[in-house]
Figure 1 (spheres, rainbow, N blue to C red):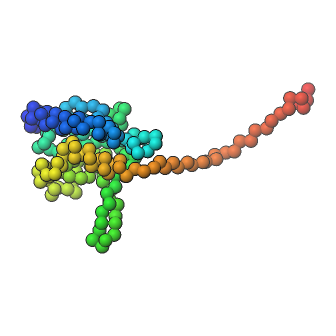
Figure 2 (cartoon, rainbow, N blue to C red):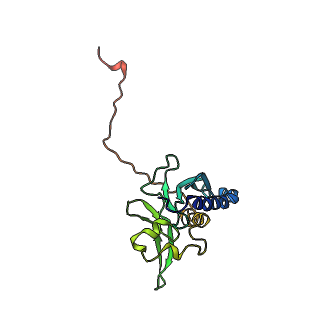
Figure 3 (tube, rainbow, N blue to C red):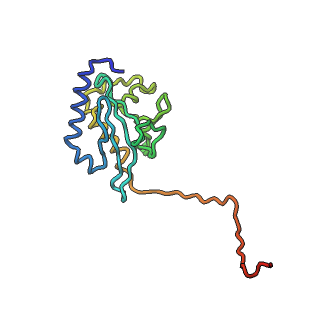
Amino acid sequence: MQTINPEISIEKFDKEVNQFLSSEEMHRKRGIIMLKREFPNVILSFSAIQLKPAVHVFAVKVNFDNYDLDPPSIRFIDPFTWEDLPNIPIPMLRRMIKDNGMMELQPLVQQDTTGLPFICFPGVREYHRHPAHSGNSWLLHRKVDGEGTLGFLVEKIFEYGISAISSFQFQTITQVVSPIAQIGFDPNLIPT
């Protein structure tokens, strides 16, 4: 719900969109395509162009309601219907080095209170509204290192969601339900 002057949010939205568009060719060459832009939403498609053939991996809707009093919201969506997706096809992992020096892979996609996946890092509305991050206010991050800007979010989504994809993996399952034997007949041997 828009609570601040919409003109302010629209102006900031336009600035974010125009900054993305100024590098549109570079983004496209990396597999990031803006499918739609209409306040308050930007819809982006992310593809793994390093695979041959290139593969569309996911799309996101970035919502700028109340921007930048609130950070943008990011939802994974079906690129054809614009409907929210209940899960995504990749884990979006971050390597973390523990205090004991051991490496751990931390998933950046979590479930919000509605059960939908969200990207769990500062600058994303769902992160700041999640009960686990109640002490990490958006206002502490706003204007810090670009967090919450469209450019920052696109880079993080690309970095954790696309850049590490290196191959296709197929799993096939063969299941025999009931073998069917067919018997062949020679018409000349059938009695009259």
